[in-house]
Image 1 (spheres, rainbow, N blue to C red):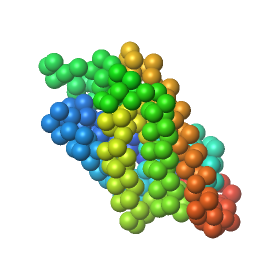
Image 2 (spheres, rainbow, N blue to C red):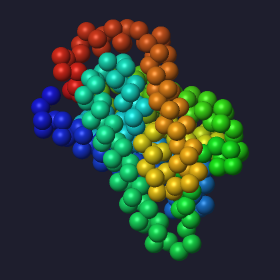
Image 3 (cartoon, one colour):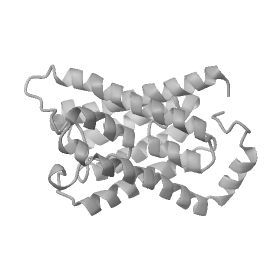
Image 4 (tube, rainbow, N blue to C red):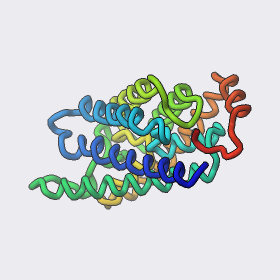
Length: 245
């Protein structure tokens, strides 16, 4: 993979994750009381859908370390590319959260401390789900999202109508997960806002880093069982560079 391609894919993942955090998490922070759970879930789904069409042909629009881990384990990209994606996603999430924090501070009375669209369990959950329940929720919801990514893509990139089920899936898992944990299903999306929220948002952050990544691993195992032919074909067609194509 050329240096220009590496720059393009890295920039796409950075920008995509920034957009996801600023607009989708922003829907929760700035408009949550007006649009409710359904509106927030649709904001996440529609944002990912738009990104799938905008940057999907460039980088695959992972914008999520769990998705990238799934693609790595499924041998659709190599470790070097995965690391670049992870760095870009984390940096993009922090940048998006910083921009959102700047906007939120211009709204009188808007609380950001320990809130700010972050994820949580116990007294930080709308239904007060416990730690174990939150872990299972994040693992299973992320597994579904990554599984759909794997099913709808045959390379790293997203093409055709593949973006539609991916966006719908994020909206659905958000509908389920928002009342339970705030619906992370994305370690970068959790990390960025938590840095600016502080307090319990940071102390509980580990769960929203670990569980989604394990969900990505689970998705790869299930996909291998349900789509073994796809995995075999991918191994045969994989280019020596292992990078996006």
